[in-house]
Length: 85
Image 1 (cartoon, rainbow, N blue to C red):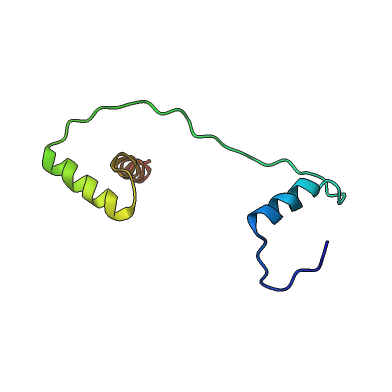
Image 2: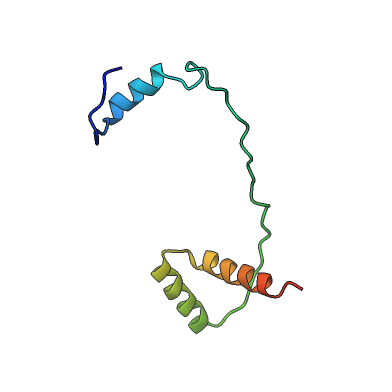
């Protein structure tokens, strides 16, 4: 393979061709196992909140770039960690 200049970025097509022809296994590198974890299945829980609270939560979540249910789940999880004995 030709020597690349510093800061050179391969185009998508060139990158595809490179990885189609290349493999880390060819260079004698052994693959190592990787520890993976998967999230536990979640259970649906319904909460009754007033419209004003929902509106505020949606607004705060949007400011953070999150879905409002994700923000609420984060808050509950944080509080549960605080309450651990």
